Image (cartoon, helix red, strand yellow):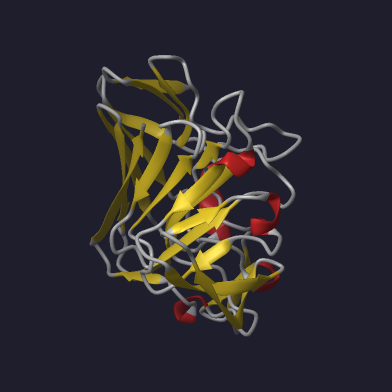
Length: 288
């Protein structure tokens, strides 16, 4: 099932499968969202839950029991239920069930709200712990944006605009975090894109360094700005060698380190949610 949200400037489409944003078009029918070309990357904007990134050896340990879980968790591959619906807002819900409990031994209610205000799409996540024991989880977003947007542009006509000129990056090894930190030094807060930028996988920012970043064109006024104030982690990714899309990814959680002991309760970035409480976070995407 697909749900459409409409404003005076945009038409937004969301799939109930994965509660995944799959299209954002302006009044000129310009598509901002990557259209999941299977030959390159077969997703649009997957939701990451109950983990973000990769687990070392694809498993975690909880109460001395080993649980296998693939990268980014299972929410992106399950059908959500539409529980709220209006012309510019909708809420999807996923609840724990016997299938999820086999992989992830926690009860949960996971709700995703999309709110369209003119050219601003606000995404809110709510995680509810309905049980009498703590819930350990992570959550994040992975929206992919067409880059370039226009037929007469190329990938190298685009740049990422940040809020400052210096950042610390965490290097990855086969999807896992290493102890290697790299300094990213920019000029005029800009990182010009080319195919080599993502040769070593995603650009990973820890310690709440990114509050806002824009994907901008040097040839047109079009740009996409993602704002996720105070989120602890952020990733920027495109498939190695691709010059077709860029993902801007705010995270409450992060991939395992190469040195992890696989214990879920000690996992870097894990959220511990007390019984009968809820966790809330949100981010916004401005489409110009």
